[in-house]
Length: 233
Ligand SMILES: *Cc1c(COP(=O)(O)O)cnc(C)c1O
View 1 (tube, rainbow, N blue to C red):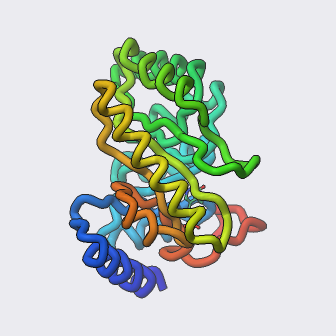
View 2: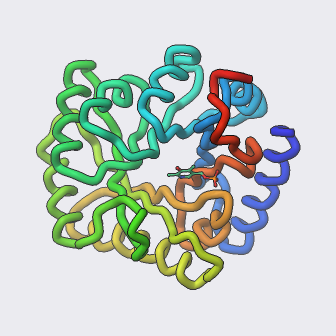
């Protein structure tokens, strides 16, 4: 099933890239494996997927213990300071940084591992209360600027989640806002290259608006069963 799903997904990504005049090589597919087991990750990996996304610190820690650096790990979920240590150890990129205290803790833990941790700032581009991320431009600028002074952190881009809606215009607005924000920050002297946006339901719009990283789960692995523990297959 994963094989067919991937095939279908890559076709859709290819078609959208052609329509949006984007190069598929400029877009990284991150398979969001949260809640799925090691065997599913291995299967996707055999089919040529190298990047995997997790949204829980302990789940990432445990999967990292089993697979280590055989694949590239991304952390995409809400991160608490006391769990930063697990994430810094495993993740190549942390997509969901949204506070000074978090950047400082990531910097500390990365320094201990003699690592430069790549991060993205999570931006709230919709009015949905449940969505995480920073919203105000002054705050975003302040946090981006703060990262310059942290030797063990490298800020390489921005991440967002579009609102959960059928209204394509609202989704598009969310993604285009992120792209404009990146351009605005780069005019201020930053050097941001990555836009992490687009999931199973909205990745085509994200490609059209300039995404460089897609975070896609269910289109690859199928429906998630939240009542099941990922360790039990
Ligand atoms: C779960 C998740 C995704 C992937 O969602 P799908 O609908 O399975 O594609 C993307 N981004 C974040 C932050 C997630 O938590």
